[in-house]
Image 1 (cartoon, rainbow, N blue to C red):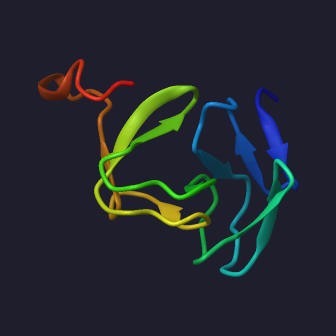
Image 2 (image 1 turned 180 degrees about the vertical axis):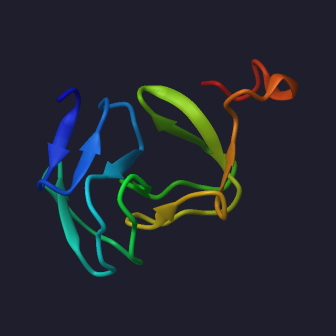
Image 3 (image 1 turned 90 degrees about the vertical axis):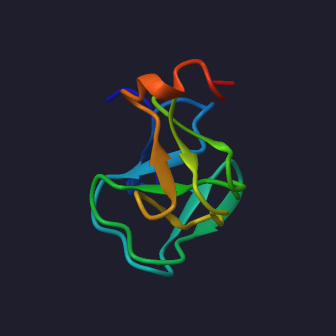
Length: 102
């Protein structure tokens, strides 16, 4: 499997990503070790969904697969579920092409 598996619970595709993808349904309060830190999930995160590996300020880019996949539409705390309620997709958005791609 490509990427780095975190505690058999989540997959980090590249070290430049600021989110990890769950490999199973994870419960609120569950912990995942990442680079010597313990991340506590603030809410349940379903299989295949993402959670923040660090605080992500509003308007910050969201990286997965080593690429920008979205932009935080509000502040996102470490361990918080990252989805359409707090992340605006940038994939396939020709109107945003070249903007904020860090």
